[in-house]
Amino acid sequence: LEYAAEDLQADREVVLAAVSVDGSALCYASEELRDDVEVVLQAVQQDGLSLEFASAHLRNNFEIAIEAVKRDGRALGFVSEDLRRDWAVLYAATERASRGHERETDRMEDRTAMLDAVFSSIPEDIVKDVMFHLKIADIGSDEANQALADKCLELDGGCKDGHFQKRLLTGTWRIIDLSD
Image 1 (cartoon, rainbow, N blue to C red):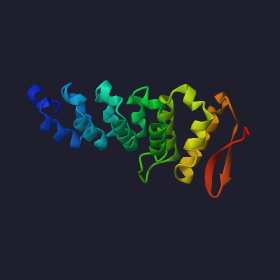
Image 2: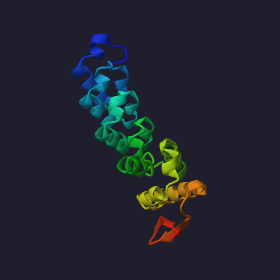
Image 3: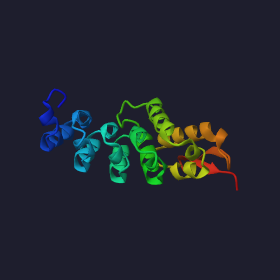
């Protein structure tokens, strides 16, 4: 699609075919097609990070945002400010990032890097909110929960309501609110 003529970059069927194979091809689609729900949804289902090339209007579309962050948690960086405050979107992005790239060669550092990217896209007041930490606790594997716990503890210095403690419970790492 990159080298296609402008009329082909504006052809809905051609663009749909291209983004179904490579979601990032959305960056070469016409402005009109970057604002087409079906085209953008197809692109983010193939590659969540292709949300970067969607129109501002569709970056604020809940269905598209959820699909993008479920595919790649780092897509949260391209979601509208309003949807970065939506618990469902935040949970989906954090849960996805906690699994890393889902390759056998993934290391804890890969998961932590993905979580760092997601956390850096979350509004600061939410990151410092105790409820955010409690809602994302215990969402994945032991390693993923440990990475989440470590990240939450790192951010705890700014939490306004409580203190957190990393504790092993029934084989999983959890965040415990000790403020009560």
